[in-house]
Length: 256
Image 1: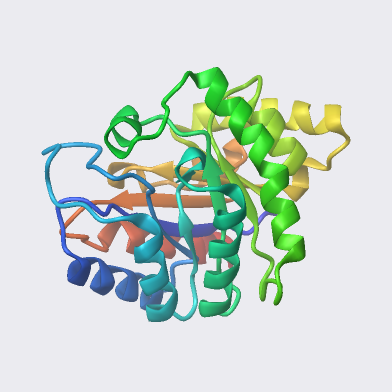
Image 2 (image 1 turned 90 degrees about the vertical axis):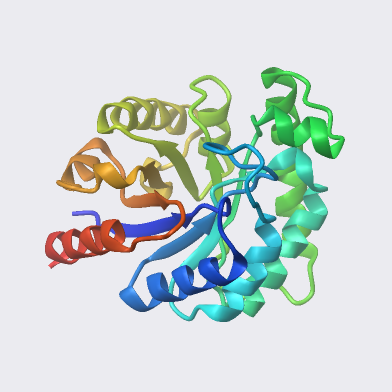
């Protein structure tokens, strides 16, 4: 049976750097398998002008502060950085973290980020085409960097698009992220299996992560049954660790 992993996404809005550092250190000490932030430039809910911090700068601090958990963005907006630079950033933080980095990317969707930071928003199709063009560039750059990565640096693609995103996952990714509920995971996971068959990929090679809310942390075996192997709860300030603690308790019981 697949071993369950559990993680936490720390929302970098309406909070302070000090509070986030305390949260990810606490999560690491509790035994989280992964710790994440999101890659946006403005809050995604509540006060649109609340305090907010940039993801990769936070990741550098997280890489140095933590010792055990894998870390990453859930997920990086592909258009926000040159793909070769992004690969180099991930490789560098893989060294800082002693091999605990994910390189996690998606096509992007939050229009305010694009408008206020001067990126072309385009269309869903144009952003997906750019992601498809950039993934090989990231992979090629990682192969050229000296020194190379320390860990496995899994490439994770986030998204639920049945025709393009899941095909890209099957072609390129070591991991894939979507959102609950379990019914959504099961449907999309089945479609990913179909794409893996079409491109000649063993579907068991793709780790399946799912992002959930704090009110959905009970009976987490539902997500295992749906095909997920890694469940990540998103938390906003004040970063109450109770939902993560419940996930860890269930992980330990299910994996015993």
